[in-house]
Length: 247
Image (cartoon, rainbow, N blue to C red; front, side, top):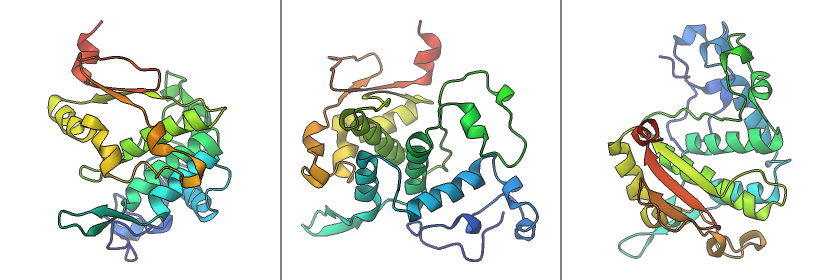
């Protein structure tokens, strides 16, 4: 496994696209680096970096406000002794969120055909995917913070829907876990919408002229325990076995 000599030691430091890990010996880096990565990844990483360096040019005011709140604003979370502890998202979490926003909003990716344009490997074709609906896949290692990324993308979709008049995003969300263990773990973060308030997911009221915390009105439903489905927005959390078993 190859770790670039200039790869940073801190998970918070921005990783340049050319310094990334890939599944081969370092000597192969100059011999087709992009072909050693999953299709689309290398090209999209470079585009997202250029967009980040351009201060998120082309995104909506809602998206820019959220990205700058999450990744460019200093956050101090209260500690048990009354002091503040600095909180910062890992760069891998930041890049995952930025990538989804970039593909959806800046490039306006509608389907598999738009995504395949980024393939430099020649290994992907539209015929490999039967469906035509839009889907973005984030692949992250165990322990790298997928739940935090999910909370950010969910909040982004929610606020985009209520603040951007032309938004095609959603205020209702279905979260499907692979087993009961993961379901319980996700539930511990989402019960009482805890993750959105304990982490700096929601900007302060008044930030960039919006009442973010007041406007964040979601109801959580777990498995078959469906309460009042509210027009303001809902999260339905279930497990894949219910999907297979249900009608």
